[in-house]
Length: 275
Picture 1: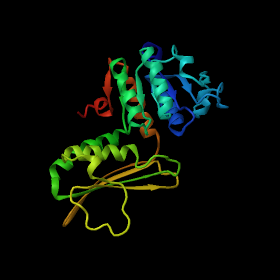
Picture 2: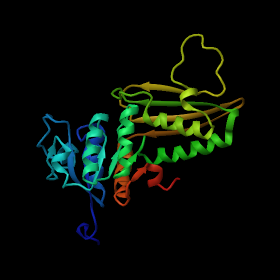
Picture 3: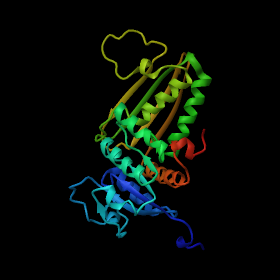
Picture 4: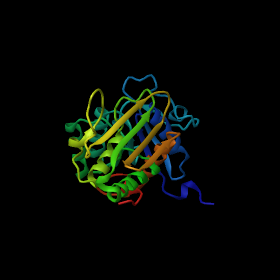
């Protein structure tokens, strides 16, 4: 049997450790035989600072104290996984760029200016951004591209997504990414053809639109369905997540892969070899 000390362990820092995804990431990092939790970061002033991160992730004491700033622990990790907030992610990216640390980013909701600043760091360090880290969802992105190209203009396209009541952005980053994949395959400009709501006497459906429907409620982890609808038939591609571990396991897998890269911008399609 190979002892864990005989192989390289990727030390992972988790930003946004107190959130739902942060806790799942602690669990995934602890359970993966090739990774170890190096640091856990929460917002400054949090009452959790100083507590053991393993207890936050429900995996027992790990001897890793929660901190309120990434700058405090720059020597304790190899790769940062950040599922925090746009401003916090930008701050953390600056720290990582200054210390040559790769960053896996699951944060959504960046403004155009914030996204531009973030992407600029790809010339200094490896960045991996993904709307969704699930292996199954990323396979769906590939299937959607194929389906859109095969079915073509004769099918109406609609994207449905459902999430828990606490989700603050709409539509989800995954749904938007699905729309981007569809628009590219169909040679459309998503900014011009996306429809995010319908109400009243709206008239017949324009043929080139891509519709989005959003549902929020309960504890739904994440459901996504894309429908291709034509006269006489309907094709649906669906993914349903039952646990956040589907996403956190993928993010940890991405962190291991990203540590081997030089500067550049990547996503889960690169990690999974789906290009």
